Image 1 (cartoon, rainbow, N blue to C red):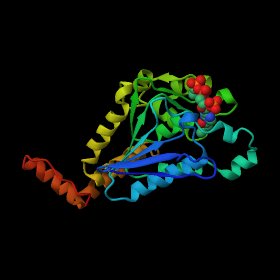
Image 2: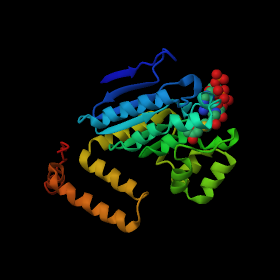
Image 3: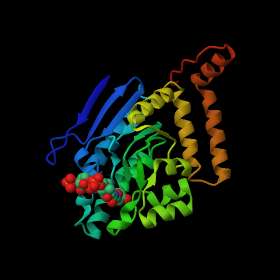
Image 4: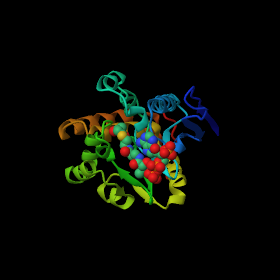
Length: 268
Ligand code: CAA
């Protein structure tokens, strides 16, 4: 296993994120426990850099993003934004970094526990498979501090759970429980708090054993469903499906099925 951290200066001597690899899984942990992993621009830049590094590394097939048991992330860093003017916010364009995470091609599994609020919820929604602990509380409470979601909350939450629940969550600022989030289709699975990380890692490992090219293209196709008409999405899906017949992994996967053995995918 390889581990590491990205140092930050001069704001803190603690690394803002920690990373390690476990087989074909690249793990990134948010590491601002004192402020419940509040997402400041420095952290988001480092997170985007590390995710891009994993995306470019052939040996990594899946990325696992985790917070702590108490908080996945309690939102964008309020202290960092409180006194900024409209012009400063506009010129800084802090959410541009988030677009870099949106462009990650490999599947991202999220290990979520405790608070996933504001930008924390928005970051969670940019992940692909969300494993949530029973203690998870999910919300977009920006309305309580005089603003609104700014990193995709009004768009992704509405697409995930529909207008009625999105309006409830965004306009009242109330938190959804893990059970509510599961019923609404906002998280993939709910597990006991003591297992949230190990379960997410198990699922990431299970994905990592599949054909990496098929994984990436399947992610791309599902995300298209949120951005195109049905006709365009179906067309795109079909092309990606045919494309996979140009890979060794397709031959290996189908031959292994016919020969009644386990496939060994190489990402080629
Ligand atoms: N930014 C900065 N610091 C934060 C933070 C945030 N989003 N959330 C929590 N913290 C800090 C607190 O200020 C506190 O620091 P101190 O110990 O130095 O006082 C520490 O984390 C622990 O928090 P609490 O003492 O408040 O812990 P709690 O258990 O009583 O409450 C909480 C937890 C309900 C999450 C509460 O901290 C809270 O409401 N946080 C803010 C949530 C929020 O409004 N998020 C949206 C931010 S805006 C945004 O995200 C915009 C966007 O679209 C990207």
